[in-house]
Image 1 (cartoon, rainbow, N blue to C red):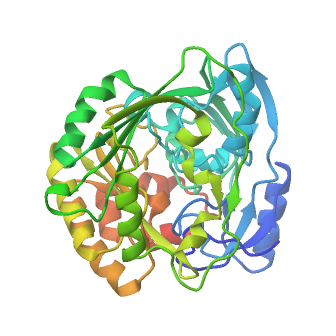
Image 2 (image 1 turned 90 degrees about the vertical axis):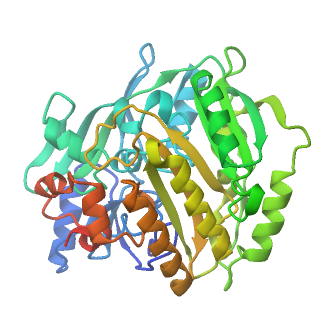
Length: 438
């Protein structure tokens, strides 16, 4: 296999893959890596983590996508037992025609089930369903010091809490038992509301969040003055009746990584202006398929190549509710001054449901996510300002998207990190964990 990289292509540390197809392959592969003289490894799924949390310190990883089988399924209750290398896309293909869907989904379906657990992913319905880990019933793992072990909220609860959102450090996840959610249609009752600034975003959020399961906003990251924070508020509910059909693939592909980034100040301003004005009415309602609603970026395969060979970094933070409005406004002002950012700047309110994992990212507040082409000095200066705003407000950054967080910020934002360290498999180490803890 060719070397593997994180989705952001930064930092650029090629990972040597060691193929895993069956659970019994895992101890053998880990022993082979040790015999090569490398003292640690890491599981690697689809590589959709943006920074270095999916990169082994040794640069040798267990390629888990071959572990892609459904072990058992109870379709009357929606409980499915599947190997960790199966993708969310494959789970949808199997479950949706039977009237079941993922309880929580991130913005891409091209992640593995194990990766969804390891990063305790969240989605547009966090205020209703919480994080992915809340719907995991049981895990089967391999630990180098114990062999195969099982954990759940009632069995080895400490290991379960450390593994949910534990960044793949507590053992190689082999099998996941997941509770799916019942749906009556694959279509979404969708509503798009254009708003003129951050204050209006919070007003709309207060009015619509309680009556809609899925809510998120796109904002113009370069707008300033009276237009600062303008965007589109997108809400949706599963349709109560309709077809249970799979969305057609219909995908394009970015064929190569260009020597330069297509994302720059000029292209951003043109795109953001056109996107903001794409609908003439303030509010538009319609039915859409699940694919364009949940996974708009999946229609362009390898879209990360738009940022060029130097890659990009995503900045995603969550700020406690009491400070959300003023801190997000200050962050947006700094980004607008920098003249850089991304086509898709995403703003969302996170709910009060507690995450089960010790290192789970969401907290009750406001989360903002956007991408930045990799420009070392510009990014360093901007991130230092943004990090300070988040840190002072008691917020935190998302490890699954991070490539720059300081050890001080990480340890303050995730005070349970030492409990995860105590349960870390001695043969597993990521470049992220080395950077922020050791």
